[in-house]
Length: 95
Image (cartoon, rainbow, N blue to C red):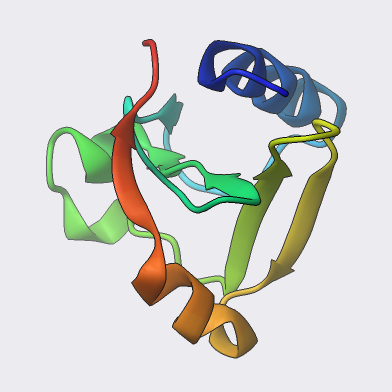
């Protein structure tokens, strides 16, 4: 079982290998979501998530899931995953 701390490290490595296309500085929030299968990290630009500057909001349809059993990171579209995302519960990840 992958801990949320390990999941954050995996996500950081993922972003090093595949830098996201976003304006501003990459920020991984300590507020995540989870269900029995996956973690759902909250990420984007620091300018938007911390400072609230709308011009730095993400406009993609990307969602990232981290499998709790394997640590596999899946990039998927948000739209077909609305039901899954709505059912996920908040969890705090280490900063």
